[in-house]
Length: 501
Image (tube, rainbow, N blue to C red; front, side, top):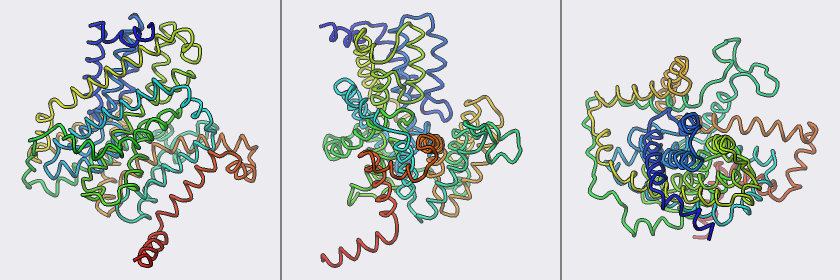
């Protein structure tokens, strides 16, 4: 009975309901603005809510978190500028749909599927949190390293052209992510004795430049071309559409929950892995991936929203943050006299169920706010290019500067924008570069931990890959994915198909 009352607290207290709604609304629009991250918004909130009671403070933060994860898809679809790293995969098929005049359909599908993915993540948090957290604890440093390698190998899925170009782009991203002082030895890497580069390069500046500025430069080639009129006859997807993509959304939601529950990963990796999974299991999409495939929207949006519930699992059961936002929330709980971890589940189970209830309410608000204002938003795409290009540049400059209030980030953003323009011009994909930058730290840190734990013995390291079933499965997956992206595998499949015929 106490558990039910704790769960219903948000629903029965109007002020808490209002705070969740306000937070979700703010999160949707903060997430849609490139450079204004959910992490930044929640961290700022801690200082504002320091003197509040714990329930109102957590309710507002959860609303912003849930809304912000979804909000990044808006500008990804309309302008090809992901509002957050978790929306990079959404832009791959969402923007081509907007160019065909289907922005309303794309936003409607992403909203409903984000709601579905969020619901699955919350359900797993409520029902199976201890089991999932126990599974996440089995991951050793070498497993995180293999997970990062799996992510890097997604370049084959993200690059619609040459595999070699995709691998080059991913490797370039890893190199960019390694710029700065080594966090372990504090030695300089790729800094060329320049003070400007010692602090590293913000991946937000790289992302906004590569997607935003390069898109503005590409649009200059078509500045006199008439804008595509958007068809907004139906926003909410039909039941038959939802039913068609339900099996895929269940699979990618599961990926999102598991990846979200791994400390230090988050929705960006979950979305990219879900996108790769969708490409592998969808045999004959109506539209090719990268050209506006509906599956390319369903997979990443269900996964990155399911990862929200997943990120709360290690936080609530072990006191270990699943991502940057839950790390800040752990700090907020400490400030309010609570100790996240196993004892919280025993001593104050009402707090756990309050968070579950707040997540459920935030998910419903996200659906409500996501399906409103679409007609107004789609007017952005219908602007004359002479207006749209300066708008994209303005958003890019503001977004890059807002991260660290640093003019140097704006310079990096403009530089990578020009570089991204030439990459696009010569057929190099941009997605793998951003993926490489994001995964660079995960790969580097866990390679260090793995090799140090094996006393810097490579033989012991490789033997360890087969000492654990989890490591073995991940290693074989890496090998299989690498082989499956080579021309040899394609020729072998074609030969088998001819023999079968």
